[in-house]
Amino acid sequence: MIDIGVKNLTKFFVIGENLLEDLSFEIQEGERVAILGRNGCGKTTLFKILTGEMDYDSGEVFVNPHKKLGLISQIPVFPLGYTVEDVLRTAFADLMNTQKRMTVLERQMAEGSTDEQLREYDTLVNRFQSGGGYDMDVEVDKICNGLGITQEQRSQLFDSLSGGEKTRMNLARLLLEKTDILLLDEPTNHLDLRSVEWLEGYINSFKGTVLAISHDRYFLDRIAQRVIEIVDGHAEFYSGNYSFYMDEKQARFNLQLKQYEQEQAKLKQLGYTVERMKGWGINNRTLYRRAMSIQHRMERIKKTERPKTEKVMKATFGEKDFSGDVVFKMKNVAKSFGERTLFSNVELNVEGGERIALLGDNGTGKSTFIKCLLGEEDCQGKIQFGPTVKWGYLPQIIHFDHPERSLYDTMLYEKNCTPQTARDRLGAFLFQGEDVFKTVGTLSGGEQSRLRLCMLMDEKINLLILDEPTNHLDIASREWIEAAIEEFEGVLLFVSHDRYFIEKFAERIWLLEDESIRDFRCGYAKYRSILEHEAMAKAPEISVPKPKKEKPKGGTKDADKLIRRLEREIDKQEKAISELDAAVEAAAADYQELTRLLVEKEEAETLLLEMMEQWEAAQT
Image (cartoon, rainbow, N blue to C red; front, side, top):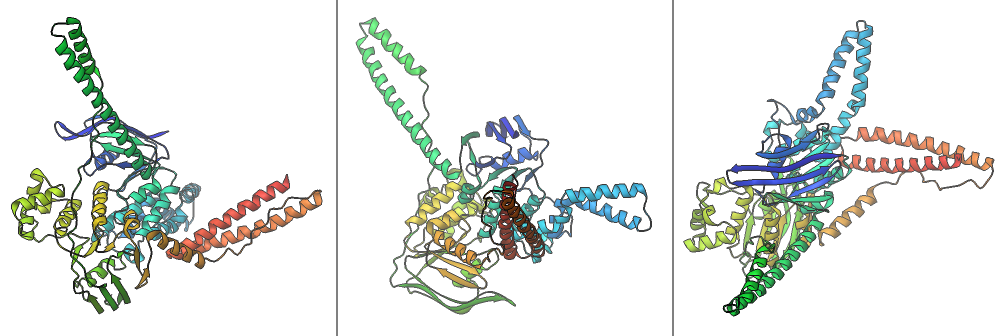
């Protein structure tokens, strides 16, 4: 069954310049599809058209009318005074209205009930129960724990949150709504690693249809079954995840380039032959006619277009020579805000050439740690840099002192360079033509990051500190910054939730949690393996022993004994699962305990299923 169908869709904002042109594709029920393309190619516009928020100029758009569709990029307007909890509960609007009516009827029936009231109340109770009304609290707690939404945040006013926090709360609300078709526009942008991994698990177990726009390559690899790339307004299709898409795209490029080169060689040869035959045919009409026939054949040949290559930013970090062994030392470093301690007793040494990832959940203090290191925040303890260390820093939130200046003027004033040098450096970062006269304040987040990098790369540094460097960048820009970092031979310290980026560069990992920093002298894959082994060691084994699979050796007496024994064990296992259900409900606000209990419950249910199969086999 088709959930979404788009046929010959065209959308333009400037006449003669189509953003989407004859775009066609179909999404089948239950598919998980990644929508890719450079920034500005029309991905978000497509989502707005699918939800009806934006009109289109021509073509056909079909969305299954029997399915509920939700878009995460839209943040609805809620009444003033709504807390995060109120916003989350709007996902259960119908159930809440049912509950209110049940409460009214209960008050009325307390003084005496009529048959009509009893029938209505019975109908409402069935509707409330079948809709999951009695599980609302557990569902809200489960989603909040998965996305890292604390009890403190749930009591905050929704309007007081940042844009990123509102996006995360709206994602939680959308997941609670039980939509049939999920449209996710950059869902991982404001999530930490733990929340992204939880979201991946949720999507992979989701029974409905998912369309996801994302620049998180690791996320796309984990959730996408196929890829639709929007190129020059048209759709190109790839029947696999992101890694498959990359390999297939390169294979298609190589094939098209080979066909183009072969055709050009053939046309060149035919052209040379035509010119010679024309020369010989001055006095020979037969040769001349043959030459014209070949020329007409050349014109009729369907020519392969030369495959386009992406514009590449050509820039590297300026490097300063480093002498000595120690880049910086931290001794007994601590930072607190009032009664809240972010980290304490930090003892770290960094030597030349190291590449370090600083990881941790949102709100643990990673950016504050970086600011303490650079002297932008006061802290306790001692931080000492080597005498020849010069650092460059790209903050998470980009700020320019003069947003009214153009990119060109910003380079001239802040870098004190010549006009030609300013144009050359901006051009290397794909700020070309009239783009250099845009005001800095009108740039997108990704463009501001690119401009700040352009200014940073000119400096002679040997310690590079990056706070979420791939935020707001499309995949092509992420690949470019990775190429530039690969060339950098100094010390790299970065904060990132981009697992592809972390896996590529981290050779040492600092994990900020529980008010301290754990130092892992290994890459990301081994770090993950260490954490998984620790989690397994902490998880208690299931108390119910796994029975051996037995078959009756013959005779009804043995079979009857086995059946009675299995029935006793099944009864015990059902009671154990019932106790786990109660424990799950009680631990709804404790993420780690809830996760452990859910795993234990899943294993217990699997064991019960095996017992039932053995019981059925014994019966037959």
